[in-house]
Length: 395
Image 1 (cartoon, helix red, strand yellow):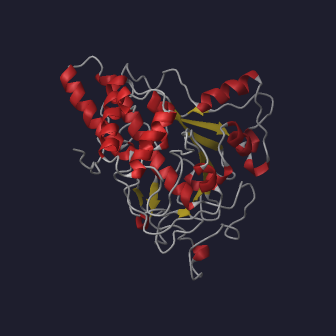
Image 2 (cartoon, rainbow, N blue to C red):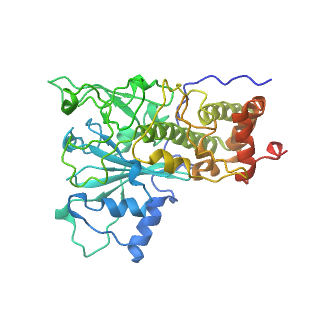
Image 3 (tube, rainbow, N blue to C red):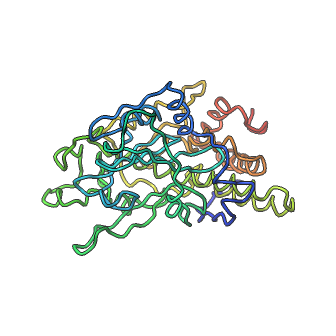
């Protein structure tokens, strides 16, 4: 009999980043940024420096980061916090492999890439006009100091992604108090310190608590036009749907990294103990994968940037034209209860010791609810789009 998986607080990786099975600092990398660096060096790709944007558009194009994914954060919780404000928000862009942060007039562009085996790897590229000579190709340089913030309990003890919601600062404070959020947090706790465009219906959230909006009767925004000088920014949206997607993605990314690292460190240990550990980790991964811990949306969500439409149109499709990338946005984020990150290189690279129990646990969940058309649809979509499914998934 299938039992509904309860939301769990995921465990934390307690090994060393320099364990020989991890070798985070020196392992060979396999991610989009390392590919772009190679193309910049051999001349098959060139970046163009463009005014106050610097290399932003070139980097977005090279890393295949859509402009409609832009999110704007004005809290000062980042590497270049001293340059960030309500009048100069930091812009984030992302896809399902890479996230990029840009601060207007900043010294660098920051990038976090999810490597197939190394977890999240951090880079910067120089973006100050004074430092650009144009005589040699620019390069993304790996940055280990980012680990000071990006390896914590909130990232499950592995190099990972963070999503914060920040209280509005008091007059005597430089910045408010940040708290980590994930998909289990209700909407009312999210988006503090961020601009948010689009509609959350009657639902309340912490976004758009900016001085420029204090005199308005509503904080709901179709765009950020008129709130700050737009010079250098790629678009004037900070889409609520993109916020929800990135929050899910950050948690799922960290869980996949932790699962892979635990399996690699445990290899060669007592078989029985390792199996118990892997089953526990598999439960955590699958709970997030099927959105078991997702806080329900209190009202219909609608974006304004086109992000939702583009995102829903993506991903591999089954013979009925269905995709795990399709969004719902009425009471839940996704139309079908299985994360699109099941297609990610990080999932594909999971060692068999943990991937096998993940697949088994996922099957237990899906097959136990096959009378529900949403769960039955996930089984059918996976059968048509995942080549490495265990035989017991097949009809």
